[in-house]
Structures are given as structure tokens and as C-alpha cells.
Length: 210
Length: 210
DNA sequence: AGTTTGCAGTAACATTAGTTACATTGTTCT
DNA sequence: AGAACAATGTAACTAATGTTACTGCAAACT
Image 1 (tube, rainbow over the protein chains, first blue to last red):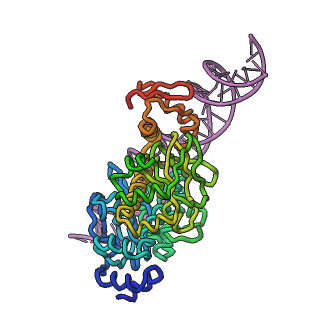
Image 2: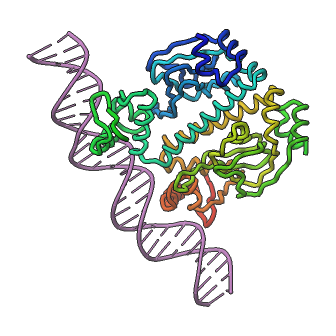
């Protein structure tokens, strides 16, 4: 198991820290679709993502969802970082986008390592930084783009994340994640199909050249 | 000067750290409207906000702006935190919303203190956490609210930040920050006035009960 | 095979937001 | 005062998005 750890985090952490992570961390496999964190949850351990992808969602008062961003291997969840320390609740929902493997590190270690290892501090800071930048990108999309452009970005990203030219989503699911209605998505997808950029099928979409 | 530092950050930092901050930090006053950071800037020092408020803006390719959030006393700019370490450029613009006072801390200290002082680590982590939460709130507004609701939130926040029931903005300025057109803002403001929630004047708006 | 269910296609319409154009009213400058 | 300018008010229109309602089709179930 230490090998996977080294593959994904070896360039970041020194051998000693890798050892520690391997000792105290527990490996965990999650299946696609599994809910890994819910809004309001208290977090007691920190996940380091070894493989797969996690999608991070936000929800409003009416239960409407919005996709914020994806986490990929080498990432961690910024939310847990201070939830752990600060005893605050999660503001977001995390769901496995694909099957995924992760290492769960106990909360206490996080702060100890932050004092002990410079590389750990760097990792934590950079994680925050990356999450912030993803949030900026998300805000750009919502604020500056129209729905058709957001849809194209969504399809590209979804395809990239799953390493598959087929996006396995229904129109309704896409509508949820972009926070719009199914009819709107169907309409825009049909336009993309007419432009020969995608091909529509039941339950999946083939990405051609977008 | 050490007194102001203690007032705002005394509950966070131990005496020794306060001393260090006071020694290496330089106090700086900025006037309302001053541009404190531009998109693409490299950041070489970290600001701790003593008084006043800073607005943080995002810009798209066409030069259209969007207000992200405000920083208030006791806050710091999350962007600088890793820009300093990572040598990356700023993704945002910072403009003094009111006259403000801040302490500029040299970059190098930031990492040194992170290893040395637990309270500093806590502060930095919490800063990130707060910024992330503000980003969530911003995304909620953009994604889930209609323009009239966003406008009401904006006016409330603006009034709160400046501690003034009068918002000194033109319709055009508001339109920029909410990324819409002046006509739309004028229209919605007029509705709010008809609902007796505000009173419109040239160059300013009186907040009554929103 | 027949029924039920979920997904997708589409028309028709409502609402919200963005755009253009122009009038009106203060302010500032000379 | 008169000219020039900035801010606001409003109408009329367009575009984008959201909503309702109904259709056909495919998969799943009995």
C-alpha cells in the first residue's frame, strides 16, 4: 500500500512523513455514487485522494444543488482541514464521482504535522489555494457564462474526469448539477447535437468535438 | 501602534508573536477607493487588516467585474497567503471600500511563524476557512438568487460594512459589482423604493427597512 | 404480451434579464 | 445664465431562461 502513497504524494512529502501517513492512515475504497460527506456533518478525519474523483456540491434552502468542483488524485478536501480544527460543520456535500481510493488521516495528526513538517504545511496551504482557485473558476462560470457555455464546460470536465468520451448522465442529473431545469438542458443538448459536437442517447452522451 | 495590534489580534496571538509582528510589520494607511492589489500581481507581503474594509473583485476576459466579498478588521487576504509561498499571481483585485489601516508582514515570516506558532497556523487556517465560506455565500447568491434578491443583499452588506444607512453608490457602480446593466439596477431599485424599503437620491441611496 | 416507469423531445407560454434609445434632472464649469 | 456633463427614469424591444404540458420511446416488471 505504501507504494500507491508514494506514487501520489511522494514528490510532496519526505520519507519520514510518508511513513507516518502510512502508519496512522487507513485506506478506504468508496464506490461511485457513495455519499462521503453531508452538509452539516462534523469531520473527524482528513482524506487524501489516491485514485478516482470526488464531486463537491452546494445546496440551497430549497434543496437545489449546484456542482462546485471535482477533487482528483493528489487532492484533499479543504473543508475538512478547518472543520477538524475548528469544530465547524461542513458547508458542502461530497459524493464519489467514480470509484475512488483514499487514505483517511486522523484529525490530530494534521495539526501536529503542520508544526513538524514544512512539506505538510506547503501541501495544506496549496490545497486551500487550489480549492480557492477552483471556486473562482466556478464563480466565473456562473456569473459570466451563459447556460450553453456552462453546459459545454461541464461536459468537457465530466469527460476528462472519468477519462471517457461518454458522459453517463441523464438530462435531469445534469440539470441538477448546473441548477437549471431538465427542459433547458434537453434544449441546449439538442443544439449541440445539431452542431455535430455530441450525440445524444438514452442515459448517456457521446462527446465528439467540443 | 502596538495597542491597535493587540486590540484586533490580541485574542488570537500570544505576546511573543504580537511582538514579532509589531517589529517586522509596517503600518500602512490606505484611502477609500485605493487599489491595493491587481489581477496578475505578485504579492510580496501579507496584510493584516486593523480597521476599515476591503472589497475583493473578480474580473472576466471582457473586463466585467463581480464583487466577491468584503474583508473587515481582523481579516487577512487569503490570496496573499499562498501567492507568497507559491510565487503565483493574484486571481483577484482588492480595493479599499473605506479608509483602512493595515499591517504589512513580509512574506518570509509567514512560513517561519507557521512552523513556530500554533496560533499563527490556526489564524492562517481559519482565514482560509472564512474566505472559502464567503465564497460559498457568494456562489449561493449568484446561483440561487434572482437579481432583485442579490441587490437587497448587496445593499444590506454595503450598509453594514460602512456602518451607514446611506449607501454612497451610483446605479452604474452597483451594476458593475453585481455584473449586470445600469438599467436593470435602476429598475429594481425603483421597485424597492415603491415598496418603501429605500429612498433614491442622486449619488446615494437611503436604506429604510430591507 | 401488456403495463408501468423513467427518459427524452418539443411546443407554447411566462418571467427575468439585457439592450437601445431617449427624456429629464441635477452638478459643474465657464 | 448657459453649456456640458453625469446620473437617473422609463419605454420598447430582444434574448435567455424557466415552466407547463403533452408526446413518444425504451427499459423494466409482472
